[in-house]
Length: 153
Image (cartoon, rainbow, N blue to C red):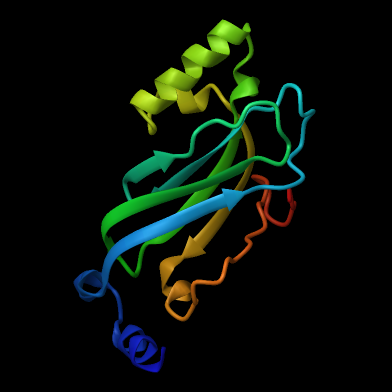
C-alpha cells in the first residue's frame, strides 16, 4: 500500500510512468439494471487498457448478465486507464442469424467494425493508479452514459 503509493506519487509522468506496472487480470463479474427488454438485450462487456481490447462472451436475453470472465492484459503501465463498455448485440438489428454472425465477428476481432454496429449501454473508466490499494474484494463501478453524470446501473 504505502510504498506503492509513494512510488506513484514520485512519478511526474512521461517515460517514468512506464516503469511502474506489470500484468493485469480483470474479472468482469456482472451488470445489473441495463436498459432494454430482457428478450432483446444481448449484452457483452468490451474492456480496453491502452491499445489492447478484449471482450466477454455475449449473454443472451438478459438485462442483468453474469459473465464471471477473467481477462488478462500484459505489460500494463500503472498510468493507463481501464475502460469497460457494456454493449448490446441486439442493437445491431436483424434476424437471430445476423445477431449470431455479429457475435462471431466480435470474437474474431474484438476491436473491429462489429463493435460499432452494437448499441452502447454504458461505460466505466478506472485509472489504474487508483487501484493500487484495492484488495481482492469485488468492486462495483457505476456505468455512465455518454453524457457525464447520467447513470446507467
